[in-house]
Image (cartoon, rainbow, N blue to C red):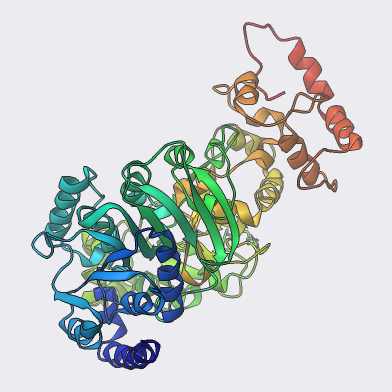
Length: 586
C-alpha cells in the first residue's frame, strides 16, 4: 500500500501543477483554488486521526480538488478501516482528476456544488477535513449570498453576514453532514477571528459544537506559495459544547509543534469578540481604562476617486497653469514617506522632496471655464475609467473632493513588522497637507484639543506618547494577512490603550468619567503612594525619561517623582466640595 500511495501521490502533484497552470492566477482567485501543500495536509489529517476514537471511518472532503486530504488519509490511516470516502468538487477538471487518482482507493467524487442542498443528503461523516475555497464576498452575487445565508440559518439557526467569504458558508453548511461525535478539521483564513463577519462562525464554534483546537500559523510564514493569506486550522467535534470545558489555542510553528500553546475556556471565548489575541497567549479582559477614542476622532484618509488623475506633483500642476486656490497639499503614500515628522513651510505645504497637489474645486464646470480655463482643460482629459468610478459618479461637481482638515497625527493604514518592529507608523503632521486613505487621520477632541490649544508645542509630547505604544499593542489591535501584512481600521485604532496620553496631564480626562469611576473600573494594581495606577505612572515616567521595567514593581524614586510632580494638583483637588467630583484623574 505504501508504494502504491507514493506513486499515486506523485501523479497527483504533477496533475495539480498542470491544472493550476491551466488557469490564470486571477481566475484561480475567483474560484478560490489554492491547493493544500502536502506537508500541511499531512499534519492536519494526522492530528484529526488522533482525535477519531472509532476504528471505522466515514470520510468527507468538501472542495476536494485533486484529493490532498484524502491522499494524506490513505498514508496515515494505519489500522483504522475506511468504510466510506466522499469528495465534492465543483470544477470538473479537478473532479475528474481526483476520481481517476483515488477511485480504486475508495474515494467517491461528486462533481457538484457543495453548498447546494441537493448535492449530498444521506452522508454522515465521522471525519471531515477540508480546505474550502477562499472566495471573497465580492465574487459572490447578491442572490447567492441570500441563498447561502438562508441555508445556513435553516441548518444551524445562524445567519451569516453578507460580507462573509465562501469558506464560512462551507463550515456552517457541513453541519448536517456530520455524524454525532464526528471530528471536523478546517484550514481557513485567520481573518474570521477578528472581523465582524466572523461572528457567525465564532458563535457556531462556541455554542453548537465542541471546539477542540485553533492553531494560527505565523503570518510571516506563509503556508501557500500562491496566496497571501494567514491560515488557521480549526478542529471541533460534533457534540454540544460544555461551557466549563476548554479548547487549545496555539500559534506559530506547526500544528504538531506550535511555538505557543495554552487552554481557553469556552465561556471566555464566548465573551470576547477578537480571538487572535488568544492565539498568541494574550488573555486579557475588556479594558476599562482610557482608549484613543477618548482623545481623538479617527477617520480614514481621503478617497479621491482616482489618485492618478486628481493627485500630481505641485510643480506639474503649476506648470499647467492651475490656480493655487484649487490645489490642496496632500501627502505621498507611506512607502514614499520616510520621516515620522512632517515639517511645514510658512505656506503650510509640507517640506518634502516632492510636494504633491490634490485637485479640488467646488465651481460648476461652466463657471470654472471662465475663472480657471487651464484647470477646466485638464479636467476634460478625464477618461472613461475616471468618469465611471463610483465616487466620481456620485459627486457634484465630480472633481470636488471631500472637505477635510489636515490632521496633526496620522497612522499608516497597512504595514509589516516582526518582533519589536512596529508594523504601523504614527506620523506627526505640522503641515496643512491632507492624506489619502492609505492613512488614518487622528483629530484631537475634548480635553486633548483644549490642552493643545493652550500649548501647541505639546503635540510633540502627544506624538511621543503614541510612539510609546508597543509593537504588540498595534499587532493585537488590528488584523493580519498573509506574509505578515498588518492593517488597522478606525474602530480598532480607537480601542487601543491611551494610558500614555492620559499621563501627559491630569486634566485630560473628561468630566463624564470621574476619577473614582475610572480607577474602580480598571482591574489593575494601584500605587498606594500616589493613588494612580501602576500603568499610568509607568507611562508618565517613560515620557519623563526614566528607565522603567515593562512589568513589575516601580522604583521608589519613580513613585516619589510622580508624587512631587502632582502634589500641587492633589492638594487643590482635596479641597474641592465633595458634591462636585474633581475633573481630573488625581
